[in-house]
Length: 159
Image 1 (cartoon, helix red, strand yellow):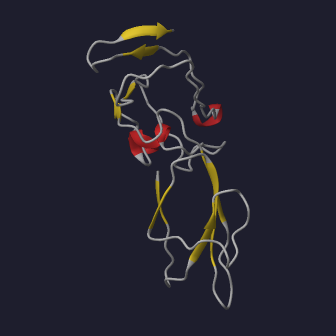
Image 2 (cartoon, rainbow, N blue to C red; image 1 turned 135 degrees about the vertical axis):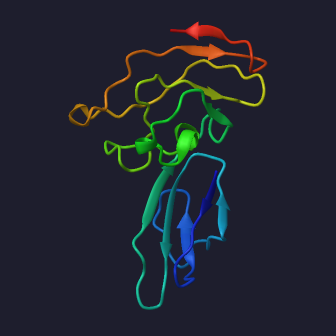
């Protein structure tokens, strides 16, 4: 996962990956920070006059993180945000569906293919959903998991 961080004035952005608050002694982020393991990224621009607010982001990796993902049904334009890569970006949504951490489907089921790039043993599948009934955002009604070795022929392993 690549993280881009910059400030308007080019102030140095100090960061940590262990959840501790960054200080002037913490590493300075380059234009792109590549992360490949679970972490709590904290970052802050440190200036002589005042520091920025601290950014804190939990990044979680799984076998599907940053893997090629295809939507076999259209994502609802109103809730597309960063697109179909959202479910595999390593970031978890919260209770606010407007943050860009969720995608939604309307009048069709979510049908997504995630290419793990090589045969991979899978023992469990986990996901979260956002429910806001007052805004007509409803819970998952069912889940079907299918696997394929060639990306063409799929077999159901869970329903």
